[in-house]
Image 1 (cartoon, rainbow, N blue to C red):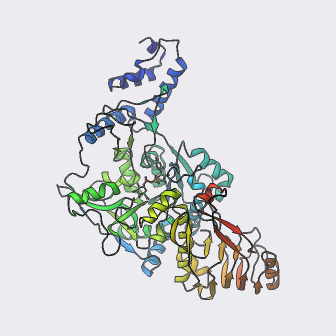
Image 2 (tube, rainbow, N blue to C red):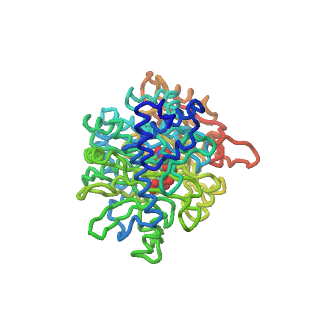
Image 3 (cartoon, rainbow, N blue to C red):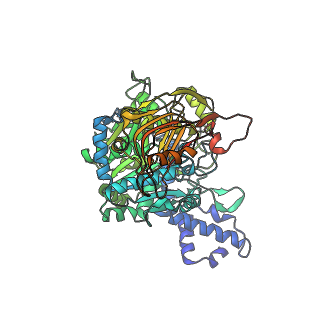
Amino acid sequence: EGNKEWMDEEDLKLVDALVAEGQAHLLADWPAPGESDDGKRRLLAQLRHLDKSYAGGLVKYIRNARQLLKDSKEGVNPFEGCTPAVPEGEKLDFGSQHFRELERAGIAAAGEAAIVLVAGGLGERLGYSGIKVALPVESASGMCFLELYVKSILALGAKAGRALPLAIMTSDDTHQRTVDLLEKHSYWGAAPGQITLIKQEKVACLADNDARLALLPNDPFQVQTKPHGHGDVHMLLHSSGLADKWLADGFKWVCFFQDTNGLVFRALPAAIGVSVANDYDVNSLAVPRRAKEAIGAITRLTYPDGRHITINVEYNQLDPLLRATIAPEGDVNDDTGFSPFPGNINQLVLKLSTYCAELHRHGGVIAEFVNPKYADASKDKFKSSTRLECMMQDFPKSLPEGCRVGFTVVNQVWAAYSPVKNSPADAAAKAAGGNPSHSATTGELDMYMTNCKMLQALGARIDGPQPAEFNGIKDLELWPCVAWSPLWACSWDDVEAKVTASKLHIGADAALVIEAPDAQIRSLDLQRGALVIKAAAGSQEAAAAGTDSTGSAAAAEAGAAAGAAAAGAPVVVDGLTVDNAGWEWQPLDPDAGAAEEQYIRGFRVVRHDQLVLP
Ligand code: UGB
């Protein structure tokens, strides 16, 4: 009691409210005033911080937790009475005429889209010590994920003649390093204020079924905290005022995506096109999913009262739900080799007016859940403290009846979703079990495959792929290592306009990197080796003839032979044959040291020689 005398009014109010909510233990062992006062102030400051950073405050958090812990103990099934079914949605073939029409429509509408990246998670599963958005998407260009995303948004904005806003959700684990990365690269040319960082806070851990907050075992003046999940993004877009600002600024769509899918902007514009065509309030991008694969499943649920929603059901809940209802065999592949339930990839297109209205209704706190690890069957004790969590894809769960919720499946997984999530050991095990490894290895190889298949579909002659094995992941396909900046091409139409595909040949061992935004490839025989078309200040035409076999020194000659054009003119590759020693994707020697970025891929790129233009 003596300690209360030095507390200010705000502390007192919070302490009284917490004690009334069963949290007296937080202060029960406090020594008399004058002893450990710094520690006590530290705890009070933390409690105030936790109170402010949760919509409704700590008391609301504790009440929500108590109810969810009770439900969990009693085994309440969140899908009680629900009948699942395979939902109907738009299924697209990457690059088909229909896909390209939707992509065109989506790019036109992207001028009215705000973009949100959730990047508060650390790569613990991946075994990478840095922030994941700093990882190279692939080694040919070395472009990191954040650069790829920012440049994609710049490219879409340039088409619309408008700077598209990007919000990045960070956490204490990732915030400073994300700021540093952006500043180091001068935001890759984004306009001042175009990128906003919103930081999620951790939430208090819970020690028992009464939702008593857990103090750290070695510090009686600190509550243990853990991440609340990517669902925080909705609360933050509301509390920061960003969602409302975008609506007021005339934006119509808000698109969400996760941190390490280099292919996200290959499918997102078409998904925006689908949203426009169907006037969807919510549209989730999805890919074919193998039964039991550890990604959520888009499912149509019908409640006993006839209501129905189309929602993500996490993979560990889908199988028991199916067994208990329509399919005693559970989640199994059909004759397409995939589960009939498409896989959620957490790329969402939401109608901004509906989104903002919902945020005002519930503050952005959506569908929390708790997942305690119980010490025994009595479910009275936890093995370790737990906390409430939430997922961004659960947003539609609270939507009112009548909202239009759909999804868009891209039938070619390799063109839409290849995230970097798993450590080499986990990745190899997943691959051995017939599942996508979602590794740094496949994240890189799938970029090359997608780029090559796009060029091939447009009429280019692409050799390969070559069989490969890296990090114990067998049966990989190493396509020619083709990478380009989104500022060069961010759509099928861009690629078609900038490459005369019928006059392009790329050999199986070749690498091609296109950075120059206005580069044109009119005729290129990249027989062997590496070609880099750089975005140079004062670009010059590299209309080149003859054969390069001596590496970069030949570039000047090649340019000079064709007569270098005025500075600033686009690089035009016309009549160029390239044959040099190139780059080698060399499996790592397990006994030799390697950088983390190489280790998680299982290879290093040895750069023997290259031609650099201009
Ligand atoms: N993230 C945050 O920003 N904050 C957090 O507190 C946590 C994460 P994970 P997860 O695509 O394979 C999701 O950990 O949550 C960011 C879907 O729920 O990579 O296990 C983090 O930085 C699941 O349905 O994924 O699983 C990252 O950008 C399925 O679609 C993103 O949230 C699965 O992804 C995802 O975090 C999948």
